[in-house]
Image (cartoon, rainbow, N blue to C red):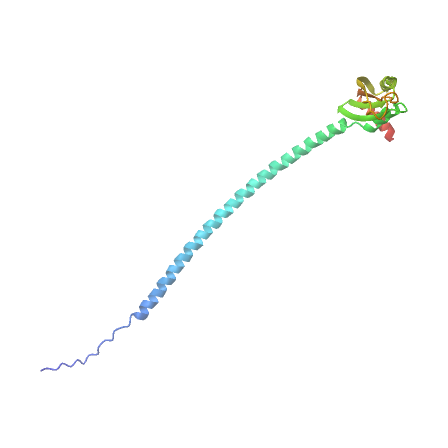
Length: 195
């Protein structure tokens, strides 16, 4: 039998395990880098899209603010016009009422006093005698600012219950007047009284 002797060195097998592990780590790091790079670009794109939307909203807000400023100015002018109209329409009621009260007879008094429309007032007055109602209408017609006086109706109070005999009861007369007046003249009277 022959014996073979190999005097050459036998090569050692390289251990591939560290290279595979190192390669795996490098591969994982590259994949994570690619993932983060992709996420970074997506976030950048989203940020840019949101900034564009913000710019659009800001532009719309500026347009609305300009339109609202125009509307506010138009509203302010409209309110100023209306206020001026209302100030012209205001009639000082006190001089009118004082004049009407001064014309009442001694035992006459007001039941109601209300403005129907500009330049017209309805007055409901109570009197002891029917002649006082006619005299009151005449005194109102003599006022410088009164244009016309109409007696709408004259009624009497209801007779009280059976406790008071009807022979002892004197009815009160209730007269309703429609008085038309010149608002400008009433304003002048009010201005004189204020001075």
